[in-house]
Image 1: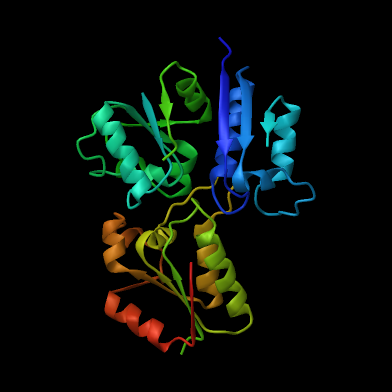
Image 2: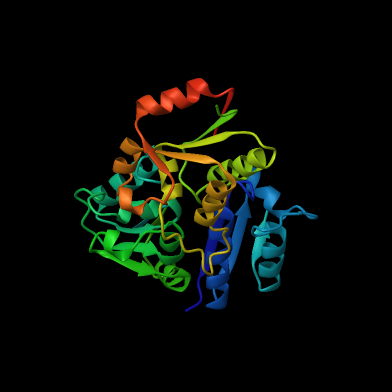
Length: 76
Length: 93
Length: 117
C-alpha cells in the first residue's frame, strides 16, 4: 500500500553525505510508488539553487531536478 | 521502533542513538558513518535487529568478517520497506 | 622539512573533510611544497584498504590517497587511533607510516604551517 515518506534535509549540498542519502531514499521510495516529500530547511535550501557547477561529485541541482520529474515534492 | 544512526561511534549523536535503541528495545538502521557501529564489540548490550546500508559499508572498506554477526546488509529498496513498514522511525542520529 | 602539516581528524565520506584534505594535499605537492598528511582519530579510516565506491556516486578516497602517496605526500597514521577504529596494521595502505603521538608532535612542530580538517 502506498505511503507518504517525508524527508528533512538541513545541510548544505556538498559538505555532508546527507544529500546523497536523501536522494537515494527518495528515489527508492518513488520507484515503489510512495509519495515522497522533502522539506529543505536551514542550509538544505542551497541544494535547490540553480546554476550549480559541481562536477566529479553528485550535482545536487541535477539530481533533485531529476527526482522532481519523477514525482518528488519539495518544500523550502 | 526503528532508530537510524548516521554518526560514528565516537560521536555524542552516535552514542545517543545507540543508547535510545538499547533502552527502548528498538531495531537499528546504520548508515553513513553509523555503519562503524556494526563492527564487532561496538553494540554493547543492544539486542535488536541490526540493518547496515551496503553502499555505505562497502565505501568505507568494511568487510562482512569485520561485522557483528547480527548485521543484516540492506540496500535502499529494503530500507524503504523498513521505513514504510509501519514501525515508528526515529532519527537520524 | 615539510612546509605544511595537514591533520585529518574526520572519517571519510560522512562529510567533506577527508576529500578536502587529500585535494589540498595534492594541490600543495603539485606546487612542490612538502606535505605531511597526518591521520588521527577517525581520519585513520581514510587509509583503510578495500574501499569500494561501485554504484555509490562517491569518489573513491582510497585511490585519491594512493595518488597523494605517488605524488610525494608523506602520509602518517596514528597507531592509537588505528586501534580505537579497529583497523589492523595489515589493513593500512602500503607506504603509510604508522606513528605514535610523540612523532606526530614532532611533525607538527617542524611544519611551517598546519591545516586541520
